Image (spheres, rainbow, N blue to C red):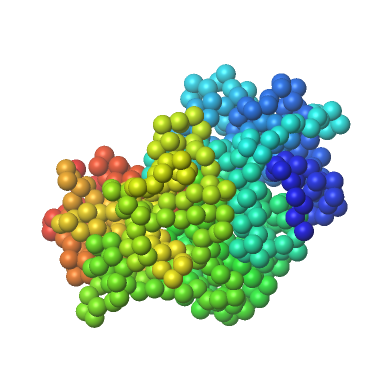
Length: 582
């Protein structure tokens, strides 16, 4: 049973007292196997909190730069125990993208302190100096004599106080800090428990980064909310060998785990049938697929490949969530195999959901389930703000007890995005969060169609880039991730950037593959692709949660910073490195 608490700090303190000898989490994947009990976690958190309280830190923002190491969770709880506001952030890894994101978070949060560990401290200190933030103290939490747990004092916490800042993954712009209150966090945790049917006997596990919403709330905090246990593996271990995720689920009897769609596809592509046959996944009861569009073909392929390991198809649960709603918004029902809904592609271009017409393009959706009780949903025409009925595509709007109130220190943007009113509504009734996601409702279930800002408007038609990307990726076993976007003064010139793995024929095959892409898009969508760029694996940018960063890819293209293996432009073949700017 989950103890009733008015704030998340109170709940965590109860866990430390009542479940002191129970395993809270276990670190594995790097040759280690380190269990940590609730009592040990509580003691480590109070040690850090007592050190923070020496400076009277109530309400100040403390950025956590532990990466995905052992020190993150004690530091997160230590901030809560001290009355500070933790701000999870990626540890610097030397790349411009990662370091720039961290520098942006430090500046936006107006951080008073950075907590890290001894392994990351030099890099964090260098980044602070380079970013002009050297005035911010940097403290390693794994050093000796940090604080005194017996000197810790319980902070005064109200339900509406910020629990933490969750910075968005940056798929459509600069990272922004979502202010998640204790009440909103508890409401969403209760919703996750009811939707997934989880309890204290559940065994969680995963590899997701700790600094994004699905990893933090679903993989770390939800088990603590329940008094359950979780197994944690570094993301790099999964990236190098995806089978290690499944082996972890087998070895530790994990019953609940989740990941973005691309992770399930990666397992299908890189885990052999022999490896699958050696696994036992019969205890995996809930496998959530979320954080990006959920693809029917990915779920089908994963279910088929790992049926050899005893995975039940009804364990796969499509879901939808976002940081602005704390985490979960909708998820598939338990005990039922994921469904699918195929519609007419031409009607969809006009934002209508209609039955399939023989001979015309189609689009297949996987519903992400019914929206949780804590959230009210509207589908709204984004220009007129008029609510739409079932069967029409519009922007997904949300409001409810687990929806955040806004972004940190961005009042104008918060008012626009978190307190929107549909046409004809009384503003006194309360505003909605504009998610920026397109979707529709059918038979009470939510379907996600794409991002509002990603929609391609060509010749008066609305085309969803993921439709083009998915169709292109089916053309060759050599194709990996891809991104489609529009450029030009009127945003009507379509670009397809497609990753391609090497083959025995080398570059000889590339011209034919580019021609195939152009022909496919022309046939399926009636669209002439202006530029096809075939690139090396790893070129297409993603957020930490696996979402395609199409805006970033467009900017790279416009600045000439994409180096294609082969490019075809307006029917002309262009050698690698010779692509002109549009």
